Length: 320
Image (cartoon, rainbow, N blue to C red; front, side):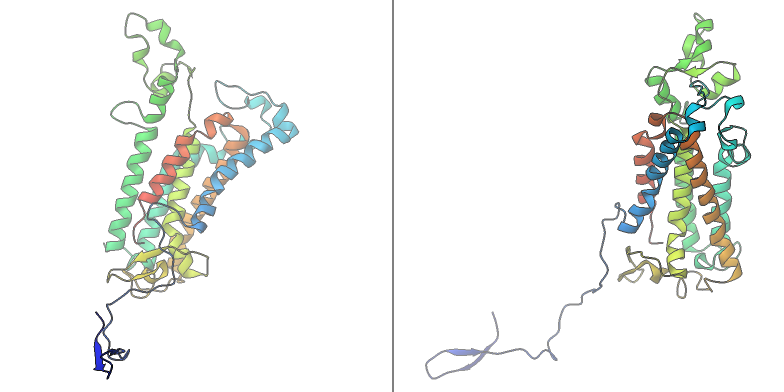
């Protein structure tokens, strides 16, 4: 009930109005920033993530509209154009970026991220100094690495890509030669089939290159995005809960007062953020080349590739 004032002659009372200057209000946290659901991307992040399906669509349209790519024969077994009829240098599997970048993509992702963690002042003093931000970054990198290994390399046996291929009717063509001595079970991975001189065919072969290019570049961009925001004036509205319980923008955790607190625009800091951006850029370019010259459309746009990669990136997000 409201506090009662003096009693009037007719027996009624007046309501006492509290003085705002003396009234104690419960503490609140005010902010003009939206509070998005933790596992959903912001509008800006959605635009960044939309680059990947847009790139695949652009590359596929190019392969249909470019006369040389449209007329060039395509080998479904090798999932590429025959070298003698390749419509472009980047349509060759032996092109330098495919040989030394795509096939070793996680090495470059790991190197770029390590450079970012050790050199950028937002993560702490330059060098081998373990800070909370670096520790959280290493945990996120470890989870992403485990996911990459499980999908493309090994998962208590064949990786997820090879398991999916076998479940959709795929097999090694040499398997028929081993009936009675193990049969198709002798070749549970594409690598084992290739080593034996066989052909991995018949099932739905999810593009491993598309997967690692999407996962690696998205991981790097999402990791350096808060720093890029703090260095410039990029539109980024993600709200975070700071260590003292306040709701604030992501910029509050980067720069002065953070684990590092150094100059975000120093030469070392620029090197630290520049290498991940370059590696992510090369990943995008090779994703475009893959879309234009390799694999079928269905193999490139398998929903599990993008859903799982996107979901992983959101779950790996920390307070930055």
